Image (tube, rainbow, N blue to C red; front, side, top):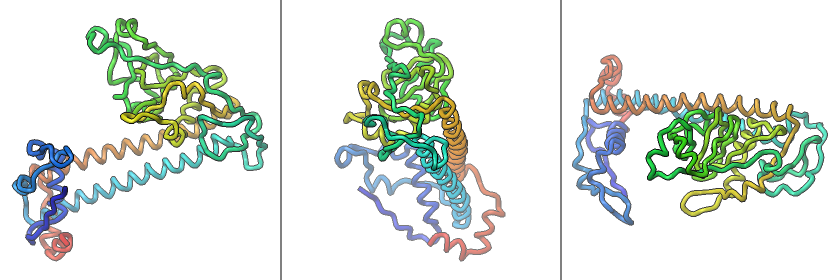
Amino acid sequence: MYSVFEITSEDANNDYVLRSLKRLALSGRFDAYSNGGVNRRKSISFRDLASFRFPLPPLNEQCAISEVLRSIDENIGCAKQMVKSLAAGKAAVMRDLLTRGGRPQSGRMQSLPERWVLGRVAADITHIPSGWQLVRLTTIAKLESGHTPDRKQVEYWDGDLPWISLQDADALGKLTIRETAETIGLEGLRNSSARMLPAGTVVLQRTANVGLCSIMEREMCTSQHFANWVCGPKLLPKYLQQVFRHMQREWRRLMAGSVLPDIYMPTFKRLQILLPPIEEQEEIAEVGASFDVRIERERDALSRLEDVRAALAQELLSGRLRLPERMIAKFLDEPEMARAVNA
């Protein structure tokens, strides 16, 4: 299942060769040689793989290119760690806020009024703040589903009505959603079970990337892969969003299906959440949203870094872009450094 290459030439840098092979793979150069292979997995013969060619500049330039790309890799690693740390920090803070509120440890607590069966944000909760309630979500918010108009009817599609589908995973990672990958027209709406839902509706993905959650900025409709919640006067949409985003362990527990992970609609009808007074919902939601905004910003920066790395690797490894002589000269003047990088 694996092809192993040993670099035998002193004029080749291991890291440069590895990156060149990766570039060929990512560009699809190997696809034309792939076949059914073992266990019907795509594979390429060693003979074909060994015949590929790629530009090989002088060793000092190889080392300089590797150093540049490695420095970007290090920055990407730091950016990923930042996102991971922020997510972990948010999880710890929100677990406390969603179960104890913003009260000091000495705040008055009461026993759970009943068994918390579905919708738990933590497994070991036995007491909640006084003034909070454990309620069935459908008693304070209206549950709505969606539908997909007939794909064969072209007149149903590409209209002016935003229609949230599984293609909108990136948008659903944001706090709010306004634009969608696909749209439908009035005929599509009239001839399907899809319904326009009001701005402020909390949309939760229940299939595939289960748990993605956003708030509609305007009237929108969705496919059947979403559970949509129109909040009543006792529940703030942004608080419900933070509750849903903190329930990843619960979503995993409730998932079913063998092809795509899915949570069935009847499950949502029995969902329970903790309901603080509106003022506390506002405070909790603001803290969660501030974390989310920072995490979104760091993820955007990470995405830009990864785009830069991909573009720069493509240009440098193909020889279309050459590094300044002063960057290459560092390895030319110190040949031992070049050998050390290759070790």
